Image 1 (cartoon, rainbow, N blue to C red):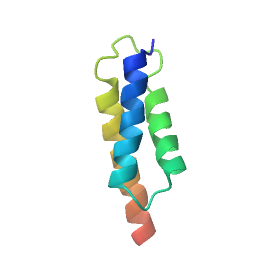
Image 2: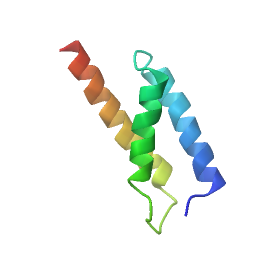
Image 3: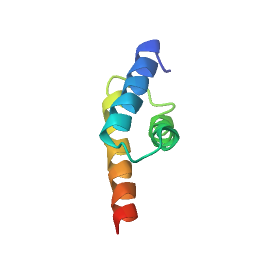
Length: 70
C-alpha cells in the first residue's frame, strides 16, 4: 500500500531527474518513474521503494539518452 510520503518522494524523484536529464521531456521522465513505481505495486515492504524507483529510472533515462546520441 502506497503512503502519502511515498507519493511525495516519487514526485521529488521526477523533479530531480528532470533537472538531471534536461533533454528528456518532463512527460517522458514522469512515464519512466511511473513505470518503475508501478513495478513495486503489491510488494509488502515499501521502505526502499523510492530509492529503487529512482535507481531504475536513472538507468532507463541514461540508456535512452545514450541511444539518442548514437
